[in-house]
Amino acid sequence: MNQSRHIDKLVEKQTSQETENNRLRLKTSVDSVQWLAFQARAFRGHDERSDSKNQGNFIELIKLLATYNDDVSGLVLENAPKNAKYTSPKIQKEILHIIANKVRDVIRKEIGDAKFCILIDEAWDESKREQMAIILRFVDKDGFIRERFFHVVHFNDTTALTLKKNICAVLSRYNLQIENIRALVAASREAKHIHQFFIQLASIINIVGGSSKRHDELQSAQAAEIESLIISNKIETGKGANQIGNLQRPRDTRWSSHYQSIYSLISMFGATCSVINNISKEGANYSQRGDAEAAYMVLTSFEFVFIFHLMNDIMGLTNMLCQTLQQKSIDILNAVSQVSTTQLLIQQRREDGWEPLLATVKSFCEENDIDSSDMNAHYSRARGRSRRQDEESLTTVEHHFRVDIFTAAIDFQLQELKNRFGEQAVELLTLSVALSPKDAYKSFKIDDICKLAEKFYPKDSTSKKDSV
Image (cartoon, rainbow, N blue to C red; front, top):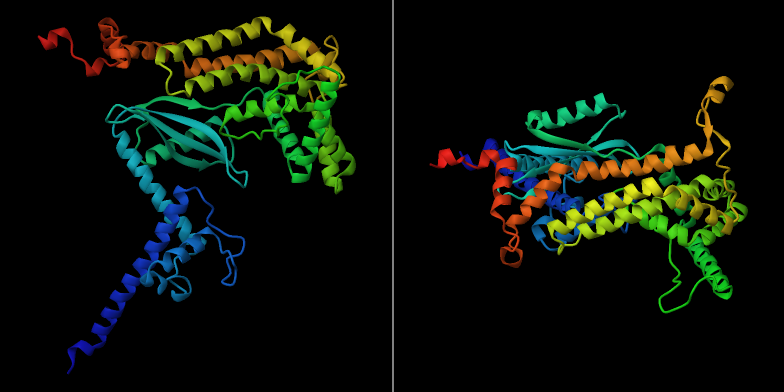
């Protein structure tokens, strides 16, 4: 007789209330995921049990939100049904995936039907899986150049065909037309010897800076070395001179940090050798002693010393260019001039820098009791081959260092600068100066503006005949 007490009414009412509660719980999880993702913070904790004092950023953030809202407090975590907590790692990943897709949709709308460039680079995750990062570069509707991180793709091999398939699959998934691509820039690696050098450099720095004890040993060794050099009048003293520092760790995404790593190792070479040598003799276990002994052999090898002097020279030039281009006050003409100057200096190093570099390396080896290689001796580049094949591939040590390392590294650097600052790009930047409002449009030139419009923006400008 009482219609409001019918079972279908009660089920509908209960279902409606559960829906509201679930939405509030899910909203709390979504807000937490969004905040942690935006701040680039870890989600999981080492111990997420209910009696843990720190259950990880995600759970702790939900707890914090619950303290400010009684409605949330009564619905989340231990107050939530076991089948609808929305806090599991799987739920976190699903929320992240949805947010990422929404971001990509926004980027897709920004691009529209315009032309765009893609930048491809190698990216490792924490588990050292091989991945490919895809960045889109385009001009938005307001005429500003935008670079958007778009996607990360995991792949098993780095062949050109695999990379092409993955790139095409990502672009087609978001309806980005292949024919609208204006350029593809793939960040390639240096010559294999240079690449191996940076791996060894990172390993050496990790061994020396692996603990506070080793850090203190390095500073003590450096202080003793500086004191000895001052006593023998080999270095000058003064305010701010001969500071005790640390070995700079290189970072994958900041090449200026690689230069700082090399520079710091050169200035603390003796102290670094002393610490690694002590670890190889007094390490806590066989593994530490073995790693330190192998690192010491690499560090005191002629090839390693040669490459880090070479990279210190080349990256010293390019680092000056990087620092200059990052200045907001620099104008376009000065930037273009700095690029040309850097290219010229590197080319001069290629033509005239071999002998001075070799002399510097040999002098450094003498100061640090490192055996120098005989440049006229034979050097074999073949490994795992027959003796006859090995003899046929013999070359001199000088040829190996001068051609395979010195010339290859410089040519790679010149090619990188040429790719990034080609003739067309430099001309576009030079002509664009005519539009600069700096100093009351002092650089305004009508001829440059006309040439800029005709050559680079023909579709956006009308001809004289059409205007008449």
